[in-house]
Length: 502
Ligand SMILES: *Cc1c(COP(=O)(O)O)cnc(C)c1O
Image (cartoon, rainbow, N blue to C red; front, side, top):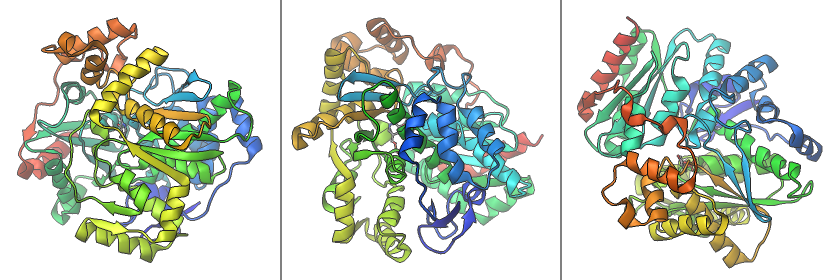
């Protein structure tokens, strides 16, 4: 399979090159040049396969320059019992005969980012070998919480890679911070930045863009790379679980072969739901992809009107991993829906950059509206949704999944469509335990309690065990105490690299 950039200047490169580069030199994102289709018979056959077998089936054609052994090696290194605490990897829970939940958080960090970040390091290292890359890769990450820890867990002790994560000192939860500063591994670095997420992210972007920094790290044997969701190596693995959910519905006789289903996706950067779009293009019988947003509802407006406008206040919500105003992966969707029209996509992206807004043409807007449906949930509705889900199904969900369930209710009420539907569950309730405990136990019970007390209380209330990755966090040794000003970030990276090569 060959890949091309959504901005048109980089074409016909193989997957190993696309994964290694991450972003195209022209600023665009890589997409496959041709479609891949999976036959109805192949989809049915997946019902009796395990997750690894399904992953190999879906990923192999996208990685056609990898040998079958290389694909198998990457898949088996990621989706195994050391990394995922459920044998199904991404288990499906049937709530009623129309509604199921797909749990994407059985990986080491308890959020869906693990589904891609457990395999990305192996795809990257294999890509380096295949392209004769001699340098090591230094992954720099700016995180608002979930991505940083998932990248640390994914890359820890992976040969020829190192990972340095920056997080805003006051911008992450206590649990998220402890997850990162207690991170083990010989090739990992973590530092807090005095500032907010924007300062942290722009600091990392400056380092990526700095010729001097590039030379200095190259002299130590490292090249910069990125693990964020613009890398095709993060997107492709996410296609797998759409097929896997469908195969499980077939296997459990919830649907008949060929029957259409809807997916509801709690969305931020549009990476997760875009994988659903590719699954649909490949032949998975998907009726609607339902984009669930929180009050940062820029995508809801876009899907309804064709106008993307980031000029609005950024809101901090109880579903922080969806607090995003620029959804980078939308660029890939626009490229696909315009029949790979790079000049048009380039024009829209340049308007987004200069004016913060763009309008797609009516034809493209119509296609978006045929495939997607969108609504959003306020914080109040999200908290209510946690409570209702528990009352209706005796099932505990986190805030992001609760946004999805609230939007599903709105979809049913608004359209009358009762197609069987799968809601993607993107985080363990224990990961956002403060909100979940307050929704289920009430503010009186939870006021003044530490996050660790709340973990215990939630576990006692729900009868669910605290996941391994969150257990005893407060007792683990702190290994990363560095706090840097934004200006000190380059120096922090250089001193991390020099420690590595000792
Ligand atoms: C990252 C994340 C999302 C949003 O996914 P996108 O691919 O950015 O749309 C939703 N929920 C959780 C818990 C996440 O960590």
